[in-house]
Amino acid sequence: MTTPAIDPKTDLVLERVVDVSPNLVWRAWTEPEHLKKWFTPRPWETVDCRIDLRPGGEFYTAMRSPEGETMEGGSGCYLEIEKERKLVWTSALGPGYRPSVARVHDLFFTAWIVMEPQGKGTKYTAIAKHPDEASAKRHAEMGFQDGWGAALDQLVAYMKTV
Image (cartoon, rainbow, N blue to C red; front, side, top):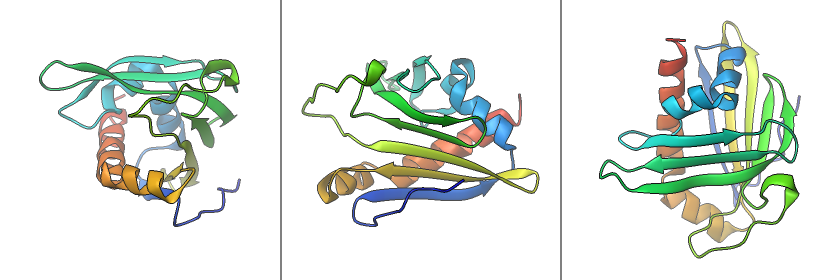
């Protein structure tokens, strides 16, 4: 399996080897009851999740702040699915490949989650591909590395208990 070409001007990458199997990483990303336990960096929490795991299917999350404010965390459309290997979705499309309606706070990107067996663990690569440098910079300044890294740490810790 190949990962996409990376453009350092428009793409953000988080890559690590984690000590849970690709099967557990897959389950964490594809089963709502698991995703809700780790997806949002603490102290926020994921309070809603819809996964229609098929090309054109919906990926949706909502989160709650420590103060109790609920907000949509993300909505998108799956593009590619390879069980225990790769998930690709985009926030630029909604379910059924319908174009998303742009709002002021939207950040459109296409996410790749790549899982490669590495010993008893997984080489985990998360890629966020943006349409332009400004979007990538905005996502980086919002805390892509810290936020996606913290979520990955939470995924690993949680899935070790499953």
